[in-house]
Length: 190
Length: 285
Image (cartoon, rainbow over all chains, first blue to last red; front, side, top):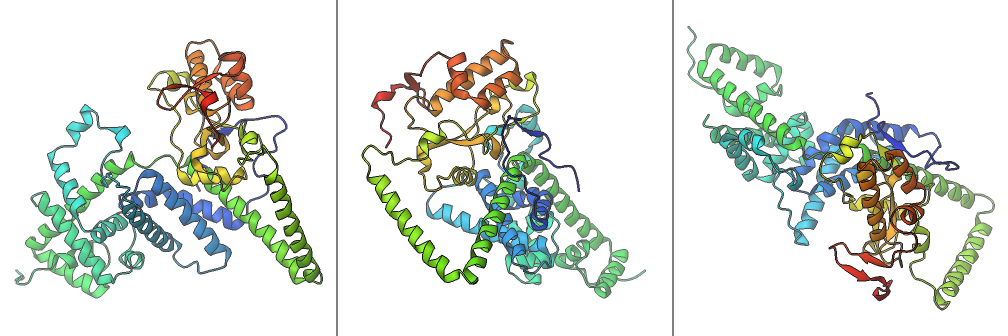
């Protein structure tokens, strides 16, 4: 496993302080943290496809890994944990997005929009040329399921895993992916 | 030359590209592609669309995924709490299942009743604050919030735009409340504050966060903001070492306020929108 990404954070050494938690971590905790290290970034990218804010994405991912901890603690199936994690993330993100919609907390952030505090500079504006903007607008206009399929495929999930995450048939996965890519290709004049 | 009269559908071309076709069918499609320029060109178009999508995704999403350091620490803390909660529950259940189960259940009921009476008695005392955790949270608990720092240079801190305190995600706020034993507190009564501000190299880490009451008389979040600005200014002016500033604010921020801002309690405070107001007019509610 790679180096601990939190290694560059240093807790202040204070005399007489015992620290937060000095007991040895359990194997399940270590397994959950290992999966978090492997999957947090792909999960974050996927959850962004639900048009959630960064804070909501972070909340959803925390809930996913706490649920995973409970799942493993209870000795439940370990078959395809990556698929299980994406499926739980999908359900929680959907719930969060619906809840936001109901409470009319409009999330204006488009999936590919830059965050407000990272406005593109002049150089980036040049890079974000007309062709890319056209592709972005096509992607954004895709039906939700098509966007989820594309995102999951981009994260390396197989058709079977995507079908399980989205609770659709294998044929539908193939159909949605083909349709989405055809639209992107048409937008690019292919 | 082989005659190609039926072209391969896009769906099959994509499935082939993704390795999702059954071996026999994949072989047949490969044979067709070997002979058919039209289908080969179409497959290249599909692969081009995939490549565009991936380039677009990578470039657009990279800046939207924040560092995992803080969330990772939070998750570790929450898992540790879950393990401890389960251990405590397991111990209690073992006892209940044993010979003394019935007697313990009775004792628990008596204790619970006494606790309720005790809470009622405490609550009925005149002048008792409803925000019981408030006084304790004026200064962070060192065992929960020792402070945590990032590896930064003076250029990082003083060279760019000010790195003011960032908004803390609601899940992190809840976790901080839980750790401080004020799980039912109203979020609007507290600022979950960085002990060492990011302006001074403080990390996005739960060990660097504590619930600071907005309604505290003088030593409020606004007073600490004043101290942070003052320390930042002094560090960047070369009047104070960064490690010293980090240590002072992490160990005794009120003492540091008296030392670097003004000797005594702050009489007036500045609100979030910059308005100066009289604290005497504020109510804890």
